[in-house]
Length: 102
Image: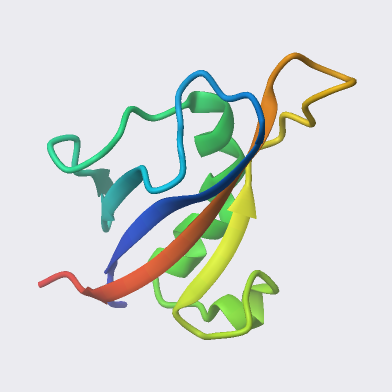
C-alpha cells in the first residue's frame, strides 16, 4: 500500500486561533510530521484530523471520504466552535496529497 506526502494547509481561521494563520502548513510524510517544514501542531486539531488523514495519506480518495470534490484535495476542521461558545475559533485545513513516498 503506498504512502503519500500530504500538505495540511491552513485555509481559513474563523474567530481567534492563538496558533495558526492562513497559509501555515504542516507536512505529513507518510507516518511522520516533518517538523523542520511544519508549523507547530495543535493536538486538538490533529486529533480531529487524524482518522481521515490516515486514510487519505494511504491513498483513499477525498471524494470517497466525503471531504472534497477532487481525489487529492480535501478539507477538515478543528473542533473549536468559537464565539459565542468559546473564546477560540475554528481552523479550516486544506489537505493536499502531493505524491508517493519512496
